[in-house]
Length: 293
Image (cartoon, rainbow, N blue to C red; front, side):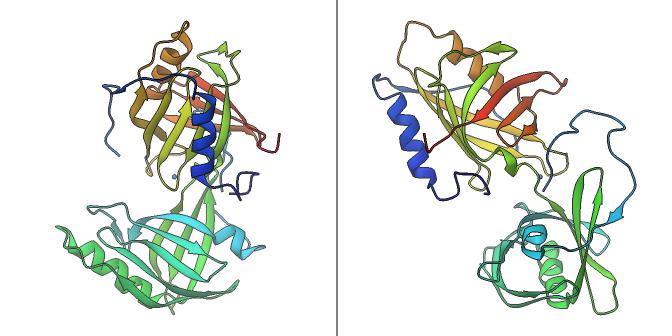
């Protein structure tokens, strides 16, 4: 992450949230709603005609910045990737390591990259048996044949095509584009209503697919589901909170309902984001927490 949260562990942030709610005790319960399970600024959610439908080639200016991080595997050859697990690749330029999942097993190896070349080596994977072994084999075979790449952009979303020695596409990947929500946040608004209590805070970690926070009364924890087939699609699932009673529970109830109704996220600027429901209504507005203060 490129924000001030970079050098602070998620455990520290969670402890920080728990401290804010540490004066109250309670038992645990779970909300009933559950869900089954993508660098983009998030400014065009739900806005038709706001970006071109043209696919353009993106020039390479900063290889680590433009290729580094997580990419979802969409196709191998001409076939859409399916599997028991989400297929993705994560480029770690600091250590020249590749991590990911081939649709079944976790994989890792090394890579060598330049503005014109990309190759993988020393690839290994776990040995779990899955129902769809065809995708797994296709991903591993393609990685062994990669010689170069092409970076493109369409409708504000970046795509990475891995090419063989003849320039033919072996694999198409899509940038995971909700990581701008990562970090520690103060809840500014819920369903258009200002939140006066500055202790209502959330910590979001899309890499671990976890959300933690303080409702101003109770501690809340849950999971994150990222729909890689849609732009900036994010949902919060299996929200669990402590059950202590406080004088004013309306803010807590409204926040939990708003999080459950969230389907998309939008970046307003570096210090503010919005969550949005299926109909395009803003459910929650967050402002980045200044941890130095």
